[in-house]
Length: 54
Image (cartoon, rainbow, N blue to C red):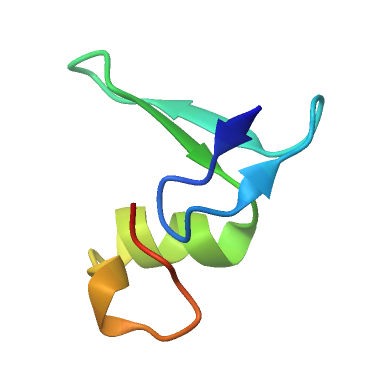
C-alpha cells in the first residue's frame, strides 16, 4: 500500500495517481485536491488540518 504524498492517506491497490517528475522522484496522490495543492499551488501540508504530513 502506498501513501499520499500530501495528506499521508493510504491508497488501496489500483487507486490513486502516480506522478514522476524530471528528476525521477515518484509522488502518489489520493485525489486531485492533494495533487493540485502540492504541485500547482506549492502548498505545505503541515499548514492544513485535513492533511497529516508524514
